[in-house]
Length: 78
Image (cartoon, rainbow, N blue to C red; front, top):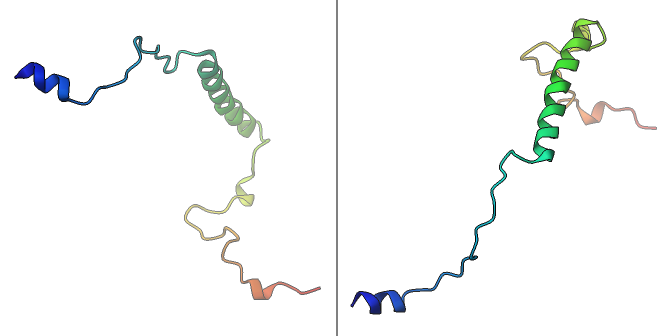
């Protein structure tokens, strides 16, 4: 009975050998993580050195000053 049940069930077509998993163990992954980490450090360093965006040029947290709420009818027509 069990043999008949197994034979009549759907066949699975799987590869004979499963492919190797390299999640995070490739050169590309290590380079990407390194670039991101170096970018975070360099960005902070440049900001400390005064080469970043000034406090007055950044909109305050929670403000709606994004430019998306500009009334299109207020634009000058050429």
